[in-house]
Length: 100
Image (cartoon, rainbow, N blue to C red; front, side, top):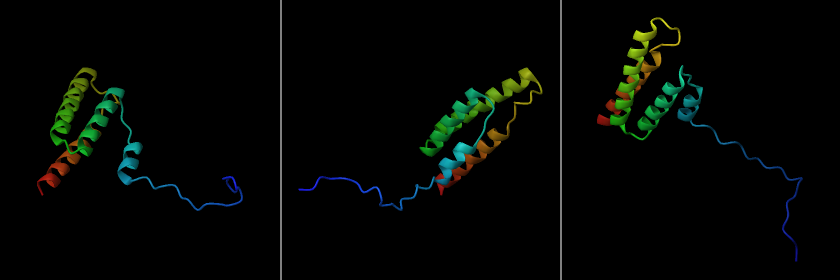
């Protein structure tokens, strides 16, 4: 009886699985503060889970924080609302898709 073993000379043609575009886009994004990063991750998870009400509440909290920070610190270079505008647009797009 033969024992089980591997042949080291045989090569395989296995390819690495491709990364889906949505997950790859999340890894490319950059934010400015750690607390914002955590809240944006919660927002993205809520959008992915189709829980748009929770995503809207998280976005409202982020917008309120941004308003308070910009009022407190004036013209600090790290305070920018471009990511909030993009998040609001993504939420509205998901709401439209949900009603269709």
